Image (tube, rainbow, N blue to C red; front, side):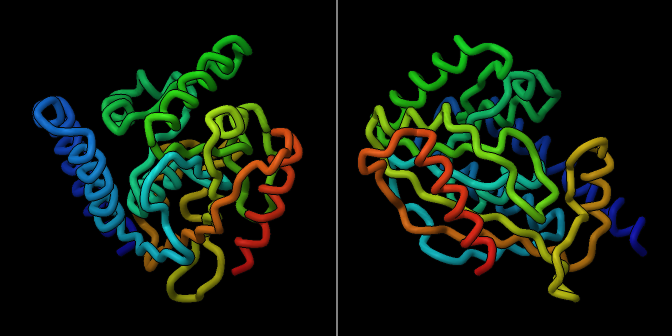
Length: 245
């Protein structure tokens, strides 16, 4: 049953991804930015249905920008989950832009790309983030810089927080967690850390039964004179607390 379930969901996801790419190429040029954002959110919500993932939201999702969402990072699924909760523009490593189909979806959703090995490019992205925030966008970052095992948070990198200080804009902490809907315990089905392969993670997710994704939105906050490193440290503590909710 597990393999049959995974194959059925894989077929639905492939069709859904192709449909999303076609929408971006053929339909998005005719749409306003607001209409595009709504379609991305609806697409993500439907993608979770195709994957068999239930979405649960706690706290108050953002209504409008300018706002920077700061979240812990567990899996590739985090992006779909956050988009389904509310559309936002992610900051992502630049090689995602060249992934087949995924690059089309990410770019169509408004992703800002950064070369993580280039300090100069990080400065460019911060400048672009400031402009986007000043235009009223909702951005999202994963300051851990990579996925974790979900049990403990990695140290937060502070560089991209400078955009919220410079704009200036509020920051809203967000905690992500995944649970087995049957046992209510933490699930590792969608884990993507260390030597785990992306395809293996996707396949496990598709075969999982009763997988539930929880998004806990904390209260938006301002810098209040804090430098980015101090703010990053305190946001990490806040997200750690939200994970216990």
